[in-house]
Image (tube, rainbow, N blue to C red; front, side):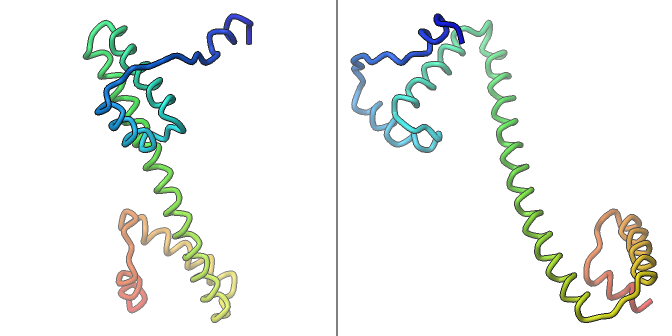
Length: 139
């Protein structure tokens, strides 16, 4: 990083006169925004507002903000879904290990069953329940 870039990135301490009601809002909101300090929250608010002022139109700025917000929501949803799928995979692995320990299934029968299951799940577009398995097994 160049010297001028480092100088621009140094923090500057100064007096700030602010209404008590605004300070109460900052106190309530800065942790909810994952800020480590009230100063960080105020700086983010200033950057947000100056970005709005610098934009050519509020529609353009709102569009960028909406895109950014939606991207964050989708990323969080992806993380949550990934964690849930992992938990389900662990439970499924436990179930399969219990069944494998209980029954002696030869490799040929296992491969044949896998092929039949793939066909059945494809036929049902991935919607296959325990009830479907019971009906399938009974013919």
